[in-house]
Amino acid sequence: MTRVQKQDPEKQPLQSVENPWVELLKTLTLSGILAFGIRSFVAEARYIPSGSMLPTLQINDRLIIEKVSYNFRSPERGDIVVFSPTDTLKQQNFKDAFIKRVIGLPGEKVEVKGGRVYVNDQPLRENYIEERPEYNYGPVTVTADQYLVLGDNRNNSYDSHYWGFVPRDRIIGRAAVRFWPLNRVGDIDPQPVYQVEQSALMQIR
Image (cartoon, rainbow, N blue to C red):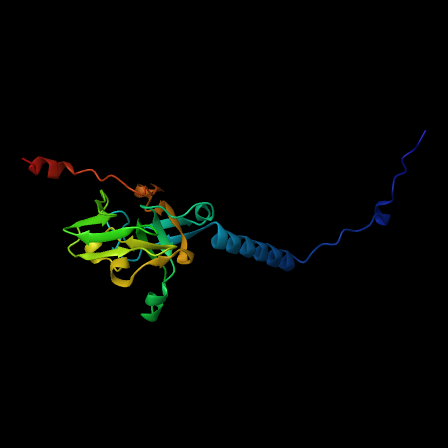
């Protein structure tokens, strides 16, 4: 019968205790690496500094920009995208990212006239803009692997009708979720429906 011999506690091997500052440094380093990886490849938070995307996005809205889906599909019309400045914008000393809505896809003809946007000579049904555009633009054909983007606040947006198309490789990601303010938290619909306020309905005869 095998007998278990008790070890003298004083003779058991001592476990080394790591310096708590070293442990903290390791934790912070790992957290930093994970945060960098998530921000670079998965998602990041952004805020809205201007009114160019009114009424869809309000000034100081906080958004989650997801970066995964465009690894498997191309941007679609209606997507709200964040992108790095194009070469033309860099020449104008722009450094910060832009956020706009995709309107024209590669190879499509786009024109703005009479307060409407036309894609391949067909009027685009838009229920998300602040007001009808008061300018004419085009017609232009979107070049391969590039996109035409416009702000929902058509008459107060510095977008493709000023400086041209956005190359695919400049697109950082898609605006997916608004997490601030709390009373408007939720997914960002690419084509939101805006209800007419009751006060406006009462004025309709």
